[in-house]
Image (tube, rainbow, N blue to C red; front, side, top):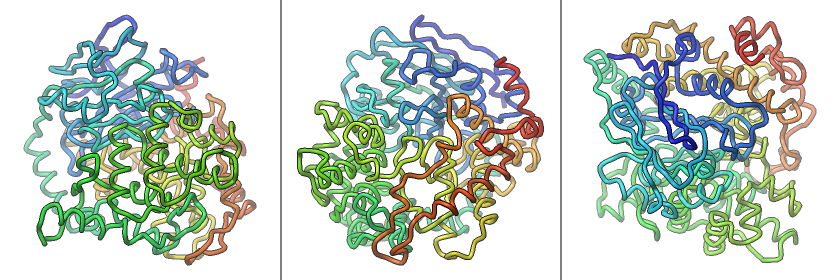
Length: 584
C-alpha cells in the first residue's frame, strides 16, 4: 500500500495546483489529520491574519486510516476560525471522507490559499485537482448543490457560507453531515470556493486491514458504547442530560426541560416508525420526515433547537434542524443565537418580541441570520458574543472564546467547566466530556481527578483526531490505533502516540498564544456563576474561586506557566523547539 506522503497545494488566486512532499519528520511527529493540519497552519499562516483574508489557509485532510477504520469515515478541515480567531479543526462524516481518500491518491489532502475571481469548485480525482466554474451553484443550498453531482461525493457550503456567517458549516451528503463548529464554511465562502468534489471510490483495504476491521467491529458491537451508539447514536443525549439536570433549557436558564420526552429518543423513534410503517426497533442514524424533507436528527438538534428554545414538538424541532442543514449553519451556534434573541427581547434589548416555544419565529430568524437581511440577523451571524457587544446582553447566553456553549451545563459538572474553558477552539463538548462520569458521581472527584480527566481526554482526542477516527469507535482503540497504523506501514507503540497527542495539543496552544490568547480567554462567562433553576442541580453555579484553583492546577499538569503559555522545558520535552525555530 502506497504511503500518503504528499499534499496538493491549491492557489485559488493564481489558479494553480502543485503536488509537494510533506516534510518526512512531520509525518512521524504529527501522524496526520489534526496534528499535521496544526503543523501546517502554524508554519504557513502569518500571525494576525484575518480569517477572511485570502492569505488564510484552508486545509482539507484525510487521516492515515481514513477509509479503513470501522465507524463513520471522517475528514478534517483546519483553518483559522472566523468565529473565535483560534485554531479550528472540524470533522465531517458521511461518504465524502472515504471517497476523498480514494481520490487523493498518495496525498494527505488539500492546502488551499487565495481567493478565486469567481465561484469555483475543486474536482479531485486520480490524485489530482482541477478548478472548475461554479457560478451556477452559487446561491444553492447544501442539498441542491449535492444534487448537481450525482456521481460524486461533495463537501459544499450553503447560503450561510456564501454570506460569511461566522459559524457556517461545510456540508457533506447534502447536509446530513457537517464540518460544523467554528465557521470553516465561511472561510470557503470568503475564498469563493463553493464545493470540493471527490470523483473516485474509497481506497481498497488490504487483507490485514479487513481482518482488523472485522475483529474490531465485533468487539465494538459488544462494547457499552457500541451498543448505545447502534441504538440511538447521539440522540439519547437529550434524555441523559435532562435526567442528571445539565440540559440547557430556555436559553441556559434551567437544567431540565419538561418537554424532553417529546423531543428525545423515543419521540424520534416514533416518528421514524411512522414513516416506515413498521413496529421493529429503529437503529441509530435513522431518518425522519420534516417540512423541509428528510432529516437525520442527532443529539444537538433536540438539545439546542428543542430544550434550548423551549420547543416540545418533535416535528418542529426536526424541521428547524433540517433548515440549518440546508443553509449549512452550525446547529449549536444557530440555536444559541435564536435563544439569545428571545432572551434579549424579554430583557427589552431588541424591539421585536420573541418567545420560547415559537417555532415560526425561530425559523424566520434562522433565515435572517443566513441571509444577513435584517440588522439582528446580521449581528447574530457574527455569533452571540458579537451580537451582545452591539446590543448588550453578554450575560444571557454563555460562550468561551466567542463560541456558544453546546450540550451540557457545566454548573452541574465542575470538570466540564474546565473542559469548556480550556478547549482549543472555543466551547466544545467533544474535546473532553468528563460530565458523562462526573454527573453521576456527584462531588466525589477531587481537583486533581477532575484535571487529570480533562487532560487525559484532550490528549487522547488529539491523537484520535489525527488518525482520523470516529469519535465513538475511538473508544475501542485501547492502543490509540498502534495496530492499525502498523497495518499501513507506520510503526508506533501506544506510548509514542500518547506523547504525540500531548504534543499536538500543545502545538495548537502555541498557535493560539501567538494569536493573542492567554489565561484571560480560558475563562467562563459570569452567567454560569448564577444558580441553575430546577432539577437535581437546582441552585448550583460555577464557583469562581474553585474554578481558578482548578485552572492553576491544569496549567501545572500541562507544563504551562501561570498565563497559559507552554514553558521552554515543556517544549523541549515534547520535541517542539523546532516549531519556534522555524518561525524565527
